[in-house]
Image (cartoon, rainbow, N blue to C red; front, side):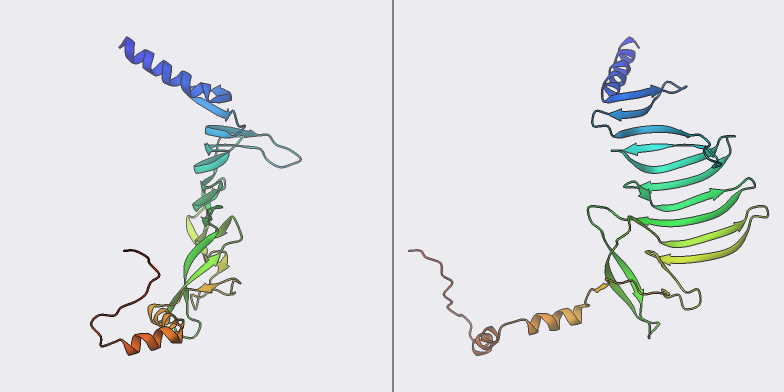
Length: 229
């Protein structure tokens, strides 16, 4: 038992050494750690006081290299839940719920973009043929975009008032199921047929002529520039 206590103390001491500043929570856990690079790490509790008529709040969650990561919860200063948000790379990602004094008021859906790779692949329906869907590679300019279904509730009755759908920031027409606006910068990914055609057309005519002349020959001697014995 004594050795277990020593091991836990060593682990705790090592964790604290990685923090330039920190605080100890009521349960003895390390909170509000700022590392030697001045980046927020681990569990944090943030208190924002009321200011200029704006209500204050408290929020808790995890920082990873100075950016919010995973689930964050926000509370009023009276202790009531006001939001549950999800983050990735420091941006909203996935479902985010918002509450008023009666209950769930609305639910948002977001998609974060990796700053190191600001491109995404989406399915886009054909504007003239409902049976066709095209794959598009799009450069996402925003760090996070509305993506998926947003639902608005009557929080007192628990009933749905309305829903809205988005595809990477583009609102979808509820009747046609297609984006209302066309986002610039879409680059089509060709299907296998068009890829084959493009490959065939890109072959130099000299190569095509050479392959035609030697199509029926079993062995073709080719000079490849290699030297040897």
